[in-house]
Length: 125
Length: 125
Image 1 (tube, rainbow over the protein chains, first blue to last red):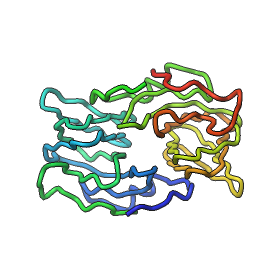
Image 2: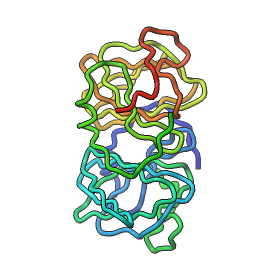
Image 3: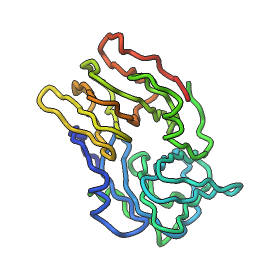
Image 4: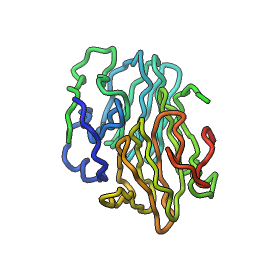
């Protein structure tokens, strides 16, 4: 569901106080046909791939790992990581991390994987 | 100039230490055909419009104002703002602010305006 931007400043910390669940991305803004999502993560996600798009993660708080099949990248608060399209990956976070994600509208969080961690899209807060 | 993402974590604070100039966006990553830029701003920018694209700003440090013709939005560290396409705007920052910008590759910082503040594109750091 597209929403035209209205040019208002969005307080990300205030938005993050609106939910507690893990691995359930919430949309806070759109940029053309891209969505800006906030997500809280803890534990391990499912291995998956997005065949058609890169995926941007910005760690706002905490520290998580981006697992690839051949290595692990540590992502701390203030770090940004772009997972290339077609590359299998699995985020994991020992404690809770708070993460901003940017990707095209319609991308499913678990990509090509069927999982109980699959979350509905277009959950605006 | 496109650069394929390699999935490496990028320390934004370390990147910001690599330059001091104002209003000169530096590219740190790409997401499909979008670029992630860092910019330090101080003072007033030129009024301009991007007719074909929204433009995302995330304030990483400091506090700036996004001027529209009918109002001003305050954008503090941790705030995100998406300027809608076709809407005239002018960022201004009393002190120095450090800002992350995401917009399609090829967007000129001064949009439709000709200005001495126009910066070259594709300045990677």
